[in-house]
Image 1 (cartoon, rainbow, N blue to C red):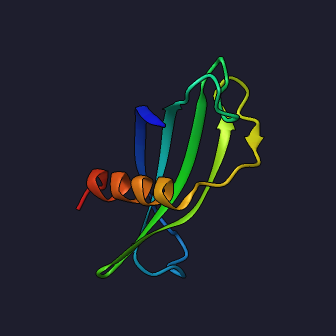
Image 2 (tube, rainbow, N blue to C red; image 1 turned 90 degrees about the vertical axis):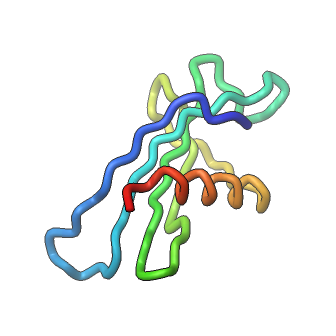
Length: 94
């Protein structure tokens, strides 16, 4: 799994109900052709990353086909989730 492109946007909670800050990452990922997540048009991963004080974590995520935005029903493996969490932590605006 290799992140080849990404965007990040801070989400603002107009209600003030949520504590901390939330960021939406759109990650575009390159997989080997043998991987079941491989899509010829590309695969994306939408990640909601939460920062609340000194706690940072992936709040939710889902894979999608880049060409159609169709959601793919797959989960990250533990080491992949750690990799994505580290990537998000490095790329948020402090």
